[in-house]
Image (cartoon, rainbow, N blue to C red; front, side, top):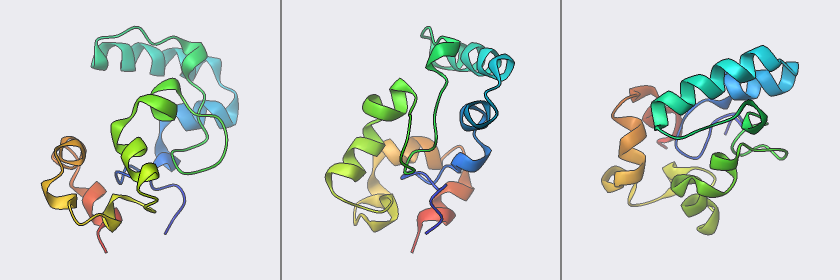
Length: 110
């Protein structure tokens, strides 16, 4: 499976946090921090916007690294993605992602 595909099916290749990290783009980090702060109702600083990708070795945003319940669950179960889980279609955590982005389910469904 494509390493840029996160456990939940999001495509890290197009994530602005990853792009800002690769390009060392502080202006994009500021934009992402603003957008994500507003979206999540928490303060996210530009310094937090460094990520190589969910399943790619390297730096992660604080959320992706230790707080994302989907990533933690899949790693604990040693799944390549949530597509390996028998509970995928009933999982409320993944449903929060797939309901808003139908492509995510297609990327991880075997």
